[in-house]
Image 1: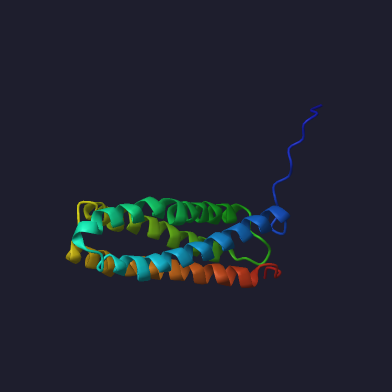
Image 2: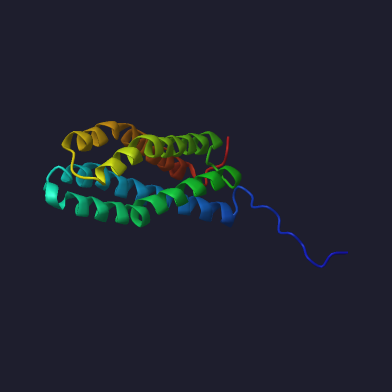
Length: 163
């Protein structure tokens, strides 16, 4: 007979499932807010910075983006994955999957489109490249807006009995 006993997995209505969901909602809305500030305020401000200050300005942005946007977005993605395992009552699995697919597509766009262009901007101001970064970013705006909408739908259904 064993003296240790494994705890049962969290049920859909469990406190663990609700806490994971609340963390997911908080990181969703925080990440969405920081992303939209970045996309609609910070990205265009690069056009206003002079060429001689641009490298230092861009380096400052790149240093700050990791703790302010990337880490919370990574935590959001992880919490979305945990929601697949521990969904609160009323939250449809289809919404959780759709949200995760938006986040993963956003990571792909970030890794293969945005990061390479931003690395080129480390070398100096390039107005055409800055404009290309902003133009290609609309996919991320759509994905992150869709994901935030899906999170809002999940939040509105949380606690309702499943049909």
